[in-house]
Each structure stands twice: as C-alpha cells, then as structure tokens.
Length: 139
Image (cartoon, one colour):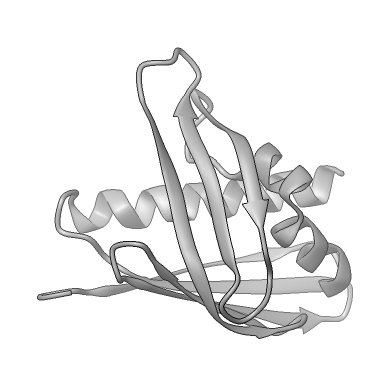
C-alpha cells in the first residue's frame, strides 16, 4: 500500500497465555469481544488458524445501519507467541503474545488504510484490544 504507516497498540491481560490464546482465536469468543464501541458487535466469526488459513469476522452496527466483513489470510502462526496475517486489501497485521507469568502482553502492529484518519484507526484498534482485555479478564 502506498504511503502506509504502521501503528502499534498494546495491552497487558491479567490472564495466562493459554487462556489469552484460546479467547483470541476461538470464534465463540471472538464474537463476544471483537468490536470497537458498544453500538457495534461481531455476530459472526470463522477462523482457520494455520498458515494459509483464512478468517472472517462480520462486524455490524447493532441498529443494522452498517456492516462489513473483516477477512484475512494467516502468514505466520506460532502457538502462544505470534500471529501474522494479510487483510484482503493487502495490509499486514502482526500480533505478538508475551507470557508474563499469569499475565500476557499483546502487541498488535498493523498497516493503516487511507480512508480514515490515523488517530481514528489507532483508537479503534486499541478499543478492540481493550474490549478483549475486559472480556478475557471477566470470563
């Protein structure tokens, strides 16, 4: 992508790596945390977690006014350590999972797109990561 910028967001989840990995990758869990604001949700998720495997998450406004599919193909899957994937528009994402005893640090780096302001993208991806932390710690 021309003029692409990479953004990194991060959190520390008060849960062991095995739980974090399961909650991050299991479609039954993905539908419960993968959204940036309370007026959106993810009613559908599928995930074939392997190199060249695909995932698809449908993100939708709860009022039915908008929806889109977030689709990509995995390029790296190192269990409990790292996931890389390429989104349909050819942007890349890298997620690193660091076990810190009973906690796990998640660091997510993604290429920006040119439609929305960079700050909006950073805030949106961070909000999704924060939702994941809240969900994983509460479950």
